[in-house]
Length: 348
Image (cartoon, rainbow, N blue to C red):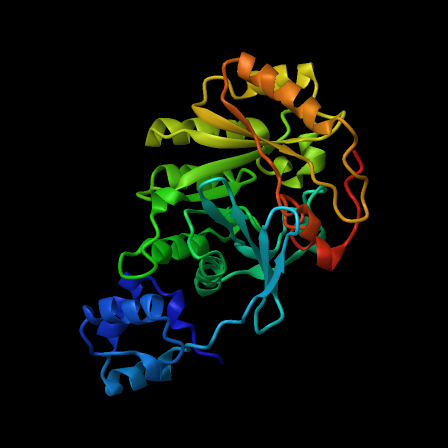
């Protein structure tokens, strides 16, 4: 049986593990510095840690080099896609996005996804397994190396973060630890299709991350596009969002995917405004990105989306039309794993 990776422990857990080994828990600070600031890849490289302790840790834990990522770079906008294949063969992808003044990383929480959203390449790939905290943190480190710097991180890659919440939460604690990666929680956003119990749990936690909820659409078509709607109906998701905003004093980000001729008309805008009325929020509008082999975006699609945006803003809601990047390397929203899986778009 393989020893657990020591990088799957938060600093508090590591301190407890050290005490269990008869060592001082305060040495966790030094160990974290070695692991996350100096990038130690084996126990012999733990600078400033006594050899006896290194040997104790090596007998109980593993510290294997994480896989190097395959890199693809968009020729149109410079977006970088990183493909990881972990030792058991499980794939995961991350994306580095260059904005006007900032750089963001979109990272995965699972290998594949169990949600089965019909428009998403990751859903077509199916669920492989949850990613461990060390595998999630490794993505951020690789994105930071590829970009030179990172201003924000979003859990919007492969997988549903709230279905792997225990590991995602631990990865956030590791990422934001001032002895570890020291990345501000306020610069981290986690996106969910609407796992209601975890939204409510997050509302009562001390985490300072931002919450994004993928509405996908505001009508009855949502259940066809996102099977999770059957377990967590949209009305329950909205109530959980309302509770989150009340409890935390924060606004929530809603994500709405514009499908041509399906949910992008004036009546759809009115339905959306009615759905989220009274919920402190910002709205991101996302053009549906066809999968490789699917139908290309029809002419005038962006202009039509802008008209929808105007209707929403006229209704008193802030709405941002997201400019999709990396489509030429299947790195845009909903396209991760498309290169491996292929397939066409949903039957709308």
